[in-house]
Structures are given as C-alpha cells and as structure tokens.
Length: 370
Image (spheres, rainbow, N blue to C red):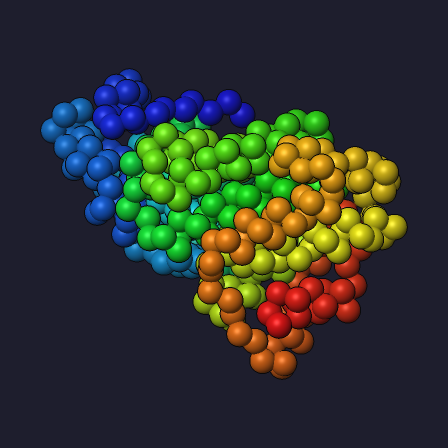
C-alpha cells in the first residue's frame, strides 16, 4: 500500500493540518513511556485546543505486549468513541495499536485470536521513536497470550500515515540506539538473502543497507541529518521484510534476548554475524529453489552494496560493524545451549536459504557465546 509520509522537521504544522482534514473528534494515542521525553508531546497536549481533536492516551502495556493489554485498548477505543488510532513509540506500541485496529470490529465475547480478521476502515497512523523495527511499514504484530508468542499478520494493519521526527532519536540511550540500528541492519541482510526475496524486496534491502552504512557514524554521534536518514533506512528495511519476512538470524535471536536480557537487535546481529560465514562457505546446502548460483550472486550483490571486493570481506565487515559497537557479550552455561537450540522457530528456518541442522545451530550458538 502507498503510505502518506509526513516529516516533522522541528514543527508539526503539516501533521496538524492533516489531522484537521480528517474531521476527527477523538484520537486514541497509543504511546509508551518515551512520549514524555519527546517534542511531539506538546503537540498532542495542545491538539484539542488547536484543532478541536480530543486525545485519549492509552499506555497500559509493556514491552512484549500481552493480549490482555490489547483487549483493554479495544475497550478504551470503543468506550471513548475514538475515530482513529495514532501510535507513537517503538515496536511494542506499534504492535498494540495494530491489534487494536484489527480487533476493533470483532466480537469481544470470543478470543480475538480465534477469529478471522476482517479489514476495517479505522485509520491507523504511526510515528516511530526508534530507527530499527520498521514496524510502521509492516503487516506484522507480535503479542503474547498465556506466555506464548502470537504472530498476527494482515495487510490492513499497515499504518496509512507515517510521521518521521528525527528529534525522537536524540534522547535514546546509547545501547538502545546501537541495538535498534543493528535490528534495521539485520532486516536488510536477512531480507536480501531470504528465499522469499524478489526484485522489489532486494531493491529495498539495498537502499536500506546503503543508508545504514553511509549514516551509522553520524547517527551514533546524534547528527540530526544522519538520524533522519536512519529513520528512512529502518522504514525501507521494514518494507523489505514486509515482503520476505525474516530468516534464521531472527529465529535464533529471541531466546538470547529472554535468557540474557540483551536487546532484540543486538541478539539478531550476534546471530547474523556468525550465520553469514557459514552460509557463504556452505552454498552446497542451499535450499532456495533458485539454486546455489543464484544465492552466490545475491551474496556478491550484498558485498558490492557494502563496498567489499568479495563475500568473505563482506562477512568480515558485518562482524566488524557489530564488534566495533562494543556491546556487552552474554555469558552462557553449557546447559543453556540445549534450550537455545530447541527454541528456534522452524517456520522462520523455511525462509532461510541454507539448510541448518540442530548441530549447525548449536555450533553457531557456541560461536556467539564462547
């Protein structure tokens, strides 16, 4: 779908004019704790006075949001008779807002997860406050029900309007800034090599990868221009995985996050940086129907995009990007490895172009953690 992009650039006049054009009475603002530190807070605080649009804030959710939180959000949406939904935050805020939209026209006497999604006309808008998840560009959401991760997907939950405000990145903690950038990097490379890739997705992957590499130093130094470009890179990488979904790096990273408390992007990058050397050295294990020569060409294209002369140099460069960020390394016990290997989602491995056995996954986890 075509999304309407609004760049705030220090003021919110264009956003205000756009919201006014929608003839809204009440807006459900799904936001996390970061809102209090953002410049856009003042805009929403004055929205009723300036544009006669009442704002109903909903923030009763946590990272890795629960199904029950979404149910509360749907209840608030209906009780307050809201006209539209606006998400401000990272991936969790986006996931909650997406599910509120999807479930807003369903039977509340039956578990929403058991019902068929029927698209509705509730407008969903989004402003990402990190440059990493790309959630504002995807049809995917993740919530947890009775401790089990639930993946929700429908094209109708892709926000129709996206607001980019680079000032939102200025207050991010250093570790979060680094790990979210790595998440965007992993989306770029995993989409590049996914068995579901096509010409369009690879074009998105290439654009995103180039933007990340060109702007990572300025972004880490909090340069406003680089921050804006990193938001763009994250968004484009999100468009890529919206086509392809993620692969083994993401399948392997979730348990690293839950066991060791490291950020999602950090964990994904640790996995991908070790997967790449294995992949380029084991092209005979290719399971992409387009063949190992095609996959080798993909790796050549990735290397060229990254300014590398060959695939081995490309693998080294990704390893270097991760290591130079000087992120904390998890410390594992030997008994952890069985739990790690058993946690890997087989569905995501179907998107991965090189066959991975349990023994291979165990080996890679040992490379990451030893």
